[in-house]
Length: 90
Image: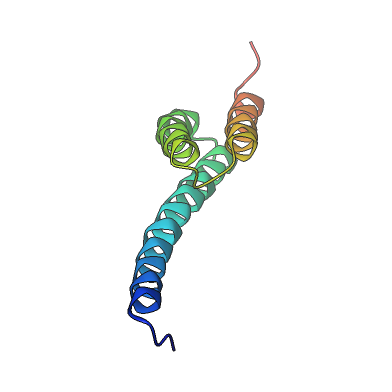
């Protein structure tokens, strides 16, 4: 347990940041899982709608340095690739 006043405040700030970051990461992971379940169930329209939400969340996470830009880009790419693969061929 910290003794100095500044260390106590830093600990408080750290816990607050951890809550915010973990909830944002959880939201991103949940949306990605829902997209993959929709793709497996062949609900392409639903997956496309959720993909827009996922891209928005990933862009915000990238902008606030919650996640590295390459990680966000890779996740977006995988989402779009899965949706495209599940679409019926013309």
